[in-house]
Image (cartoon, rainbow, N blue to C red; front, top):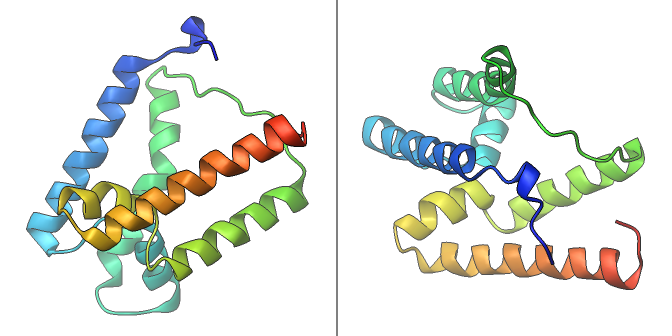
Length: 144
């Protein structure tokens, strides 16, 4: 494996990670809530208490790339995929988030930082499944 040094963005990645961490800390301190996007999305869409901050958080998630572009940033374009593949992948991720009682942001960012055993196991499961999926599709099936 080689690194594409022309597309290597350590400073942007570091800044993005720091901002996600800061957002998680601020949400936990101010609202006492964990920054888990799947939980925020499901409660904002399907009801629950205090939906206003959840809707604002989702607007921020969707607006952030547009703001980044407006400030002169460039977002790399992914290889195009067929719509049915994207829909199936999205449904599988949603099912996995529901099955795992949270997503990578909730477990990986917030849960591990709180030393939650459940989150550590969930994150290891997410990562191992991702590694295995990429290996199978890229190296065994030659699809990606």
